[in-house]
Image (tube, rainbow, N blue to C red; front, top):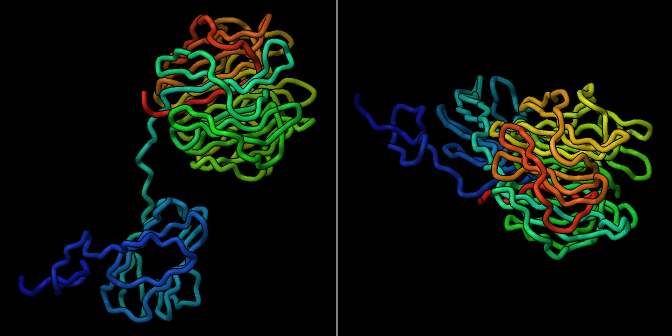
Length: 424
């Protein structure tokens, strides 16, 4: 063979390229709503905030190549459009709309000739391979003191072995009947609740377990709601009570920003529980619909879409708790109230299938909370049985609930908890 190889890998002559795939890669991440690109380059297109129209060169030679990559895996939300700038695209002129709208997509186009113009060599979707490491610690926070009237803002840290620490002086508005979830992979958020009236304020928790001051509330103020993480690094608050049960939801970004109300799906109810499952999805279950206790569940996709009601399994009840456990993303609902206090549990597979009742272990109680810890285990804690308590029950990585562990910290009910930190 004789001759020299060109920059573009599809040509048969030219100079040898020093960059990967024979392309130069742009140093700039494109974030704007429009961009003009050149042949021989690869581009990272970030559509987190908006769609983007990509204008191709007005002239091209056979073998010219351009690669476009979904930088933030957001093309499914904000797509890209290609303006072929007077040249054909797959044999169609530039009056046709060319859109790519799938998360994780990459588009590798090559110019052929004036008849077919630009032709995709590849338009693959790449799966998101990295999985966030599991949270190792947990944090219980807020609640109602045993006098039945004093609202609290104290917190209790849980280490990676499930040991609960003594009270930490509270930060933010004292309240009860709130919810909490992990977000961002290693942080936590407390939200909503009742401080004397319903509220929508939130408090972010850092990866070292430090609770921040109040963040102005977003969305409908309410209490007796539930929250869980989804999509590996985001969270969702949903359902609750404003005076009567509701089914609206508020999504939380991976930076802890709470979105405005989204129309709810499924039966409006309050005093339910939620947990993540399947590593990137969530499940809401049980509760009180304003007239009766229910056992139905609603699955949440890895994009935060809440599905319609699934017929309930197990004892209908409210004021229970839930958390994730296991190495493949299982969950557990436990305890609650159905006219009397309960200690039974229901395991949830990594596909979101709820199992039948499992005989309870530990003190029967309601208005407790739960969180994941230690990467693959869970902990139920606090609540009200015959009296307010601070006992905890550890959950193994196979979903086995242990006997009561003597409580640490202030006995209270109607608090919230979630996991944080990926460091043991």
